[in-house]
Amino acid sequence: MQAGRKSCWRQLQASFFRLLCLIPTGFPVRSVDMQRATDNITIRQGDTAIIRCYVDDKVSKVAWLNRSNIIFAGQDKWSLDPRVDLVTKGQLEYSLRIQKVDVYDEGSYTCSIQTKQQPKTSQVYLIVQVPANIYKVSEDIIVNEGSNVTLSCLASGRPDPAINWRLLNPSAEPLDGEEYLDIIGIMRNQAGRYECKASNDVATPDVKYVNVVVNYPPAIKKTQSSETQVGRMGTLQCDATAVPTPEFEWYRDEKRLSNAQGINIQILGTTTILMLANVTEEDYGNYTCVASNRLGVQNASLFLYRLHIFSTLCLLWVMKWAVASITVWQSIAQHNHKMSPYTTCTLSSFMSLDRLKLI
Image (cartoon, rainbow, N blue to C red; front, side):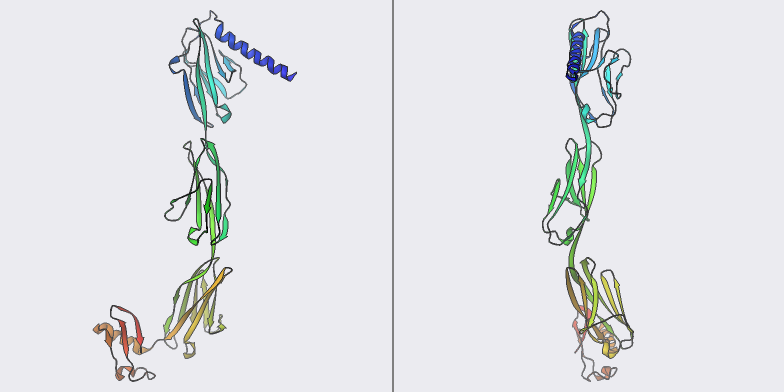
C-alpha cells in the first residue's frame, strides 16, 4: 500500500511538470531572464539563501523544482518545509528563499517557465559550506622525557578543513603534522601548550589546545658557596631544574642536616638555601646538596670558606695600585695571627678581579 502511494505521488509530480512545461494557457504571467541559465550559489550553513529567477509578462506558467520535486507552482506552495518561501518583488521576480540553510539543502534548483513559444528552465546549483569544527582532540598528557608522543586533532567542515599545529613557545613556529602530530623522543624543551587550528575560510578557524608535561630527572644548574667570618651568618644556595619539582636534602660529610638550632633550610620551588647562624670554626668545610625526584638524583658540593680580614685589605691594595701581583709582608699578616709571616696575596688575573687566592 505504501509503495503504491509513493508511485502515485511521483506520477502526479511528473504529470504536473509535463503540464507546466508543455501546455500553454492563455493566462500571461512572466518569463525567465536566461542571461545566466546555469550558476552556482555558495552559502554558509545557517545563513539564508535566495535563488534568483527574473521573469516578464510573456510567461503563462512558472514553478520551482528541486531534484524533480515541485517546491512552488506559481504561487501555490507544494513543499512542506516552513523555511522555504517566495520572494516576489513586483511582477518581475520569482525567487526562492531558503532560511537556515543546511547541508541537505545542497543540490540543483530549477526555475521552470512556460512561454507561448517553448518551455525554458534556469538551473542553479546550491553549494552549502560548513565552518571548520574540531570534534575530537587529545587530552592533556604527562610523559617522561624520551617517550614517543602522538597528538590527534580531528575536524569536520565543507570544504575539508586544513589542520595546523604550533607549540606556543616564544617562537610558536608551525609544526609538521595534520590530523596527527608525531613527536619522536620528546625532550623537555618540547613541553608546553600545543595549539591545533582547523580552517577552511568559511568562518573563523576553530582552535583547541593540548597541554603536554614532560617529566625529567633533576639537573643542578647553579651552586653558590660562601665566604663568612666567624660569628656571622653563612649561606649556601643550590638551584636545580626537574619535573616533577625536585626534593632537596643537605649533608655535611655523611650526616644529613635538618632544621635545628643554628641551621635553617629553606626550599623555594627549585631552589634550596642552607643558612648557618653564628658560624664557628667547626662549620667551615664541604657541604653536599642533593636534588631528587622519582626519575633520578643529582648532587653537588658547596663550600663554606673562612673570610680573613687581611683578604679584604689585600683586595683594596690591589684595586688601588692595579698591579698583577702584590706581596704583602709580615706587617699585613699581623692582622691574622694564624697566617705565616710569609703569607702572599696574589691576583690570579689582572683582567678579572673576581677571584682572590691566598697561598
